[in-house]
Image 1: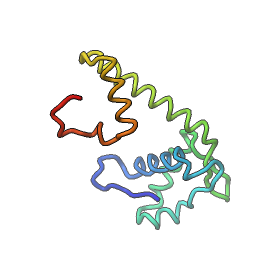
Image 2: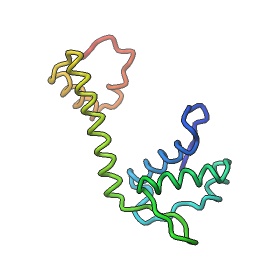
Image 3: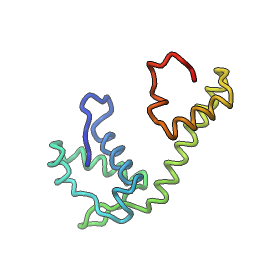
Image 4: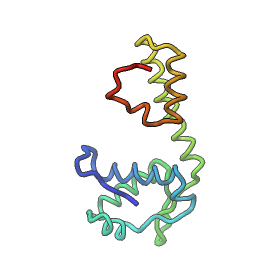
Length: 133
């Protein structure tokens, strides 16, 4: 379910927040489904329960989960999570488009990259490619 990268510079709790958020966005963790208890997730990941507690507190602060006293933590309305993710992606895309314009990249070139990248994701990661298709 969650794999931690100990070489990642981000704190462990931030990695957990990101992984759980991704699971919510892709539908693995559905609306109103219960998250694992702090203790069980800490045991599964072999980390301190305080780290899990901090991740859950951050998810709750951001509105991704809610807690029920004595029952546990649950996923909130996933449509609001998706709306937030869409907003983040639009902002990143806008920043990227601005940078592409400043670099002299044409709109046609951007359309080509998007179309090919959508159907052939490996096309966009072709760092070893000399040609600028």
